[in-house]
Length: 404
Ligand SMILES: Cc1cc2nc3c(=O)[nH]c(=O)nc-3n(C[C@H](O)[C@H](O)[C@H](O)COP(=O)(O)OP(=O)(O)OC[C@H]3O[C@@H](n4cnc5c(N)ncnc54)[C@H](O)[C@@H]3O)c2cc1C
Image (cartoon, rainbow, N blue to C red):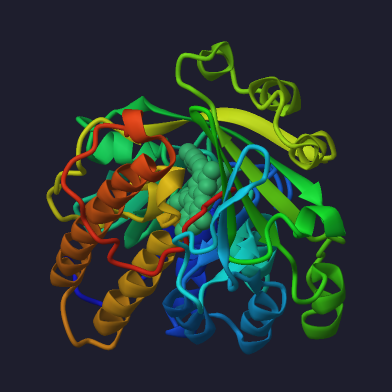
């Protein structure tokens, strides 16, 4: 590999991981371009809330421009207070449900992505679906897009999610397969009677053979109002606080094997028929829901020959939602890759050793995060954890009771 600093970095995918990387590279003065398949920033629903560990939030603070970091904090919500375990008639079984660390925060995925898109300007190109990449003899990486255009750089990072095109070319032996985890998920705008169900870090309702989980996304400051004050250039839509619910759908249920559904309420109401009226009402009152089956890689991610092409986030380690750690891990990938590339930029090391060290850490961190998510699935669905192996502590901040 030629040694003239990190050169231009091409990031494929403007998800949470790719955007964090872009900010981290801008901060250390490295030239970066992000290529996103979607036609525009707000094209697609990006999911519900996620939990971020304190270490991840601190890393974001060190990465983002100050006003955007402040906005992340201002629009986050508390994950403290007792975790409750109920039966389906809302009799309290425990007030000590295991939960996220006291200092973790809930953030809405859509709001977080909007914030991360801020300040990157024309470094992001939309409507650029990568179809393949190639490395040339002179140390250039070429990205080819479905619209017939190309981009050239010195490093290419596949941050293009679980179905990564970059991974499929780089590590073709790894395949994406269905897991046993099928979840119905929705969100219900806050109302006092619903907030009472989830006063703290999270609530689990154990019915006969089925588990419903509730989490609150109560913004410290409403996002559009907070953005108007802290980062007026962002187009942040109004967003109401909400209670997020997740029901693990039994894998044999027809809804679990059918196509992804946009409205899960009917299926969920059928599965929780006879439960406490407040729970039925919570599901009925939701303004958004869906059902989907999680996909996983068919094996732990193996190493690949170190080159100018690497991976980040779900593209390298697709965790189950039960881990509540995929976004946290993707952000750490981004921060650590930017640190290695900054060392190259400063002339302290060569690119090959920097990318090799990054890859070793990525595989260790990512595979451990995947194992953790599989092991944690047993908490929710005792009999059917997806191919569990030995327990591995998650290596990065995580927040349980995860959701999108
Ligand atoms: C139900 C659920 C709940 C979760 N809860 C949590 C949680 O509480 N905490 C947590 O840490 N994690 C959680 N996660 C995981 C987390 O959402 C993901 O790990 C995280 O979003 C991964 O980010 P990413 O940037 O790697 O990928 P993505 O966010 O998937 O971004 C990939 C981007 O690449 C783009 N793209 C795809 N293909 C191409 C292409 N060919 N060319 C160009 N662009 C392309 C996509 O459009 C997308 O914008 C949850 C996941 C699920 C499913």
